[in-house]
Length: 289
Image (cartoon, rainbow, N blue to C red; front, side, top):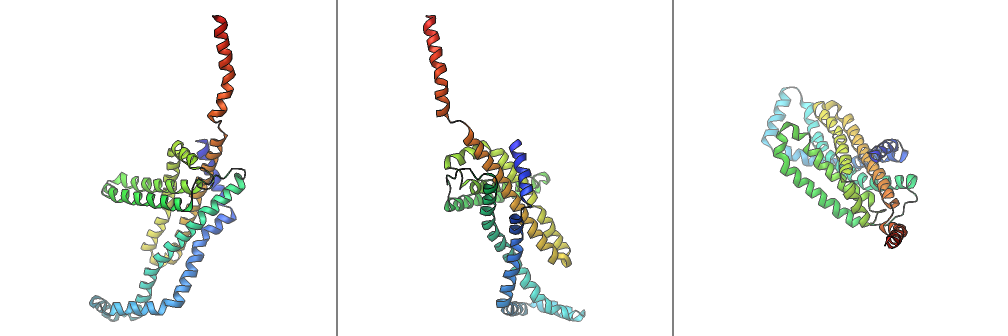
């Protein structure tokens, strides 16, 4: 428990580090750059394609006629741009977050290792390919568990428990591998995951609940469309900051646990120390005979 709380407060403090703050803002920078680039090269063609599709639908023609009769003819010109924005925005958001996730975990691990565990030996028990395979396997297992558990979501208490538990498990599996791949050997990684399974799962679940906070802002963006341009960037920034906090918590916990594991005496170190006692005991037994 002490290790869990200590790593938690250290993760909170590291969220104020300039490198972490810069990484949390990076998705917004990537989104703006991607939006400007796509708009410069493809905006007009995308608008023409959407207008052509809309003109081929009878329902759309009826809607346009209703807008004209209601005196909202100016709104017709805004429909196509809105559709393009709504279609492109999710793609830009997902790609930006994926890029940041690939950049953020190594950078955060490097930050924690340099500032706190500079003397910790790197045994390179994992690899990039191994990490990708582990992430893919864990993601498929989490998706399968999510699909199987969907009928249980209609039971009110379970909808608040099952999804965070599933995605918390996914976070724990992926983050644990990434944070130990460089410093721990394969045997050390398996030992740590076995001995610290419950605390690591708890970290994954708690950060999963924190990750649900941006969903409230997404919902608000749907309810209050006028505020969506402001709420969406804020939601993305919060999501990225939660991801950074999660990586920091796992990094502090696992590297500290690895350091403690290596500080424990090996069985080969304990045996010689107990040998003199065994000889003395044997000599005493011989004298008593």
